[in-house]
Picture 1: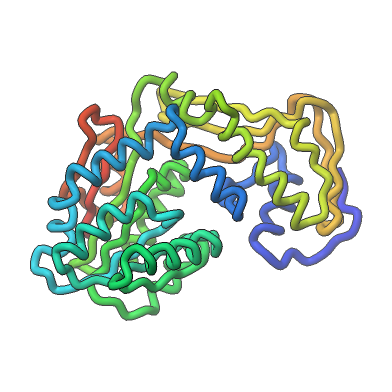
Picture 2: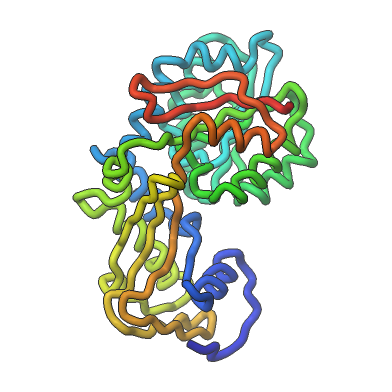
Length: 323
């Protein structure tokens, strides 16, 4: 591969595409799968029979909502509910309705990398819950967290649903949690979902569904590159592939080139060559147990003060506070 015409990379997406597709082995970040089409595909994934994560977290929120919100603000003094990776907010609405119906004083701050997701969520909430105070923010987690450092909030409840922490290997997860800890006051809380280790086949099926929706979702990053950077990826030349290591608890998603090929990314002045069966690593989905979560918390300056599980203990939401 070679660079046809060196240019300045001006966006995070451009930088990642250039660096990831000129590296060995090749990689792209799953956060860039999400655009209007990617958002819709992920909503479809959450409805799939194989994708248990959404159903399990829904079960927790529906059955434990009263206890959860009481933990948020026992004195009812008011707070900001700051959600990272808000998406379409379907699960969050369970808690929002519980908070409103019990007259909690709070403002909801949905944060997502997708401006489309934030805008759609704000409009939807305005229709469903007109009394809800909503202030949305668009950006990457770390960039938004930097902004939060300089924003004066009352008590903060930082919420991360959907086991989004699982997109980070342990060293980066600790840095992420340390950064969250750094923006938290002594009274602030972190409410976060962690998918648990379980039958390896159940996990593999969740990321490689029989209808091919997850494959289309994974390939959407190539569609975005085609659209935004004038590239000529043939997505049919790539195979979606999922692996899971039950020892480490790490599931990985790849796009595998089914033939030797070259791709032009004209906006970046880049030609990318693939050998047959060469991979692009696109996503990890880490799985946990209590021991691992306690270790992550300790390394990050946090402590578990409560946890909520579904009946099968396939998924858990933990509540953290600063040590």
